[in-house]
Amino acid sequence: MSDIKTIEGVDVRGKRVIVRVDFNVPIKDGVVGDDTRIRAALPTIEYLVRGGAKVILMSHLGRPAGEGFEEKFTLAPAAARLAELIDAPVAFASDTVGEDARAKAAELADGAVLVLENLRFDKREKKNDPAFCEELASLAELYVNDAFGTAHRAHASTAGIASLLPAYAGFLLAGEVETLSGMLDAPKRPFVAILGGSKVSDKVGVIDALIDKADTIIIGGGMCFTFLLAQGKAVGTSLKEDDWVERAGEMIEKAQAAGVKLLLPVDVVAADAFAEDANALTCSVDAIPADMMGLDIGPETEKLYADAIAEGATVFWNGPMGVFEMKAFEHGTRAVAEAVAANKDAATIIGGGDSVAAVNKFSLADEMTFISTGGGASMELVEGKTLPGVAALR
Ligand code: ADP
Ligand code: MG
Image 1 (cartoon, protein in one colour):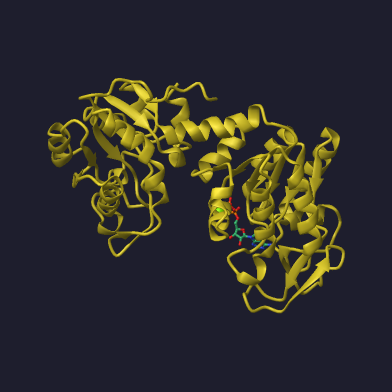
Image 2 (spheres, protein in one colour):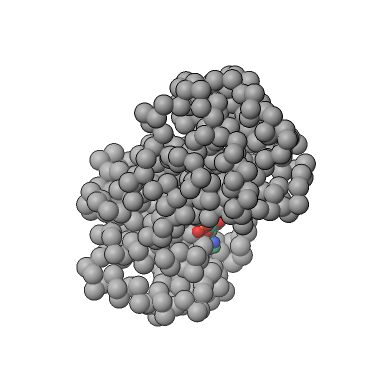
């Protein structure tokens, strides 16, 4: 999977390099909130600037209609934030492949940076439209993809353009692919995978793929109740997916047959409502009250899981153990995050939007080996799918 060329060592001096970045950041009142995604692209941007390239950055932001400019989806605030982060001027084009973009791209000095307006203001972007690919490619001489977060989409800026210019991976994308592929292809063992989040149906592909690769699978979050149902337990009003009970049972059997340890909660925190101030109690998974829902794993389960995590030489975590957004039900997710952080002998890899948010919330990001920036893209990679944005760089 990691047989992709990075931009490292390529002579970029004086060349126009168009770079697909993921600047899909939250913006409020014209100001960028969390700028993690912009920061994640800095190694590639700064490398190109230092190398004397004329750097043209393109990204999508949000979900505009694709019928032209929409104020609330403009990338101008992201360009302004980038200028602060690199402490240098950043030019901004008020269109993507129009007159302003062409003029500003043409007049770029070596080492200067230009941000194009939102790719998705043009509906041809998501259609991977050949003419749009040509127009984007005509702005530059080299193409770099550093937008791992959109690598699972075959759009003009992530796929089509790559066949029109010499194409390379940026450092963020290359690091993601290398880390996640390395984990799957040659994990240090034991390989412990922790899976949680809300639904089994969202994650079947991931669970299935990891049963083939891991030595231990730990299940928590809302999805555990469908597994508990498959074991014949009653789960009260917990999140459950009746259509997936049989499939969950098959996965338990598959793990057993493969000699993979599959751990399920032994106790949970149950509540009488999906609310911060609900009445809650801790109970065994054999005694979940009929009128209550499990919103977190219990203390016995925390211990069981922490012990399993401590054994791992590779630990992958996707999906919170409970409704960590509510203080009353964050304890299990925090305990697992702490157990992962405490295993300093292991490669610890965190993937998934909410899991990463949880790790950040508990200020444990610096304790992990690798935090994936791609939600959907990392999950598809773990599932074993080919990412169009990565395939296009081969
Ligand atoms: P990720 O983004 O890390 O892949 P998911 O999106 O699959 O994770 O799941 C995260 C969501 O799962 C969180 O919003 C969390 O509140 C919810 N969740 C976790 N445990 C439960 C539970 N027991 N009942 C309902 N929702 C849950
Ligand atoms: Mg999520």
